Amino acid sequence: MLIWLTLVVILLDMVSKYIVSKLLIVNESVMIIKNFFNITYVRNTVSAFSIFSGNTFLVMVISFMIIMGIILYIRKNKPSNKIEKISYSLILGGAIGNFIDRIIYGYVRDFIEIDIFGWDYPIFNLADVFVVVGVILLVIATWRGRNDRG
Image (tube, rainbow, N blue to C red; front, side):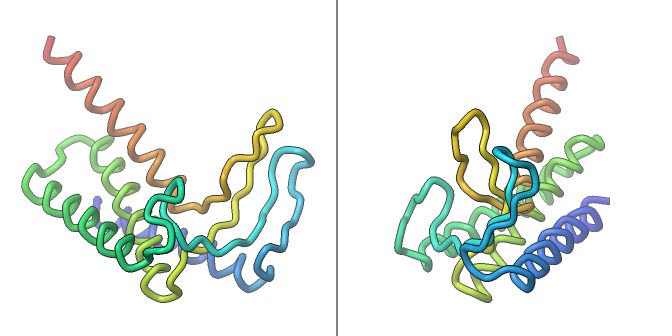
């Protein structure tokens, strides 16, 4: 299940990026919900929160190390419940999706723009969503596991 879900996550991420990059030019924006949600195609050359700005190679090396660390952790610890399997699939698939972009293009294709209460959140993509949701699910699974043990 873990491998298949990871592949589905990568596929959904790559297809969404492909569609947006073919329909829009860089920095073009399409309003979906006024004052809330736009599709805005940008090329992100830095990592989250502009860490390691201007050093694409370092970002790629760190991304690769994180992906390998997750894979080794999964192989060693063999997640047993569905929530853990889904969590790791989302995190791994999202990380690989953005890593593929960095290898092929030297940047990540972002396109989801949210404006909540006047705060213009950084533009992101489905891979980012998958990683965040995966981490949240993993925290919940860990918390539930600790509570179940007493």
